[in-house]
Length: 234
Image (tube, rainbow, N blue to C red; front, top):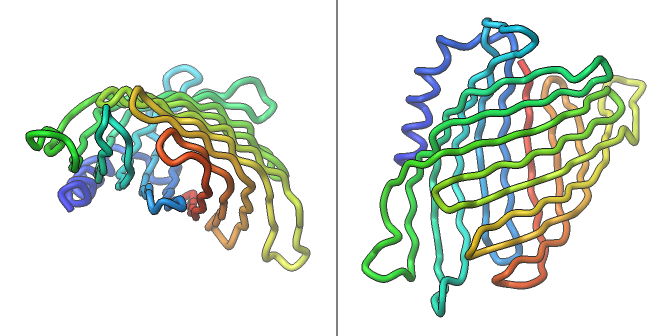
């Protein structure tokens, strides 16, 4: 709960510096067949300052997750809450719909790891989070690729996601885009890959995305995962 309270406080502090006419709210939840989960809530807003061709933005990202990994001969169960306020830049690449973004910020993390000796896995830590991403967007198709690094546990996450319009409604509701996710993640203690189909449906200003598929990780081997995501531009 400390992480959620801090997220609300940081949001209040960040909003006066943002340009509320250009932003996005995004949230999601994912769970696998071993009941490991990852949930998040994020806000990204553009700033009115425009140096050269860059578009600065602030982002607030709050997450909660539960997972397991092996460390030596021990199985570690971890519950983590994190909060990452970041400053980033976006720039268009040509005039074909491509853009490139990068962000950096402190990674504030509350972690409880059961299975470590001397309660060494409990407490609060501060690290650095960096992320780079590229986006191609057209109404009928889009592509998003990203890679991130968190210094606290040397964790790297990468994903490529592509979508194509499969159905266009003549009545205003609801178009459908289908696509594919491919993701990889890990550090010295854990690694995993995920891939599977996705379906995205715009409902008014909301974009609702459902996804799922195959997962293989270094602890449990092969399995499955599923999740929902919500995206709201404003």
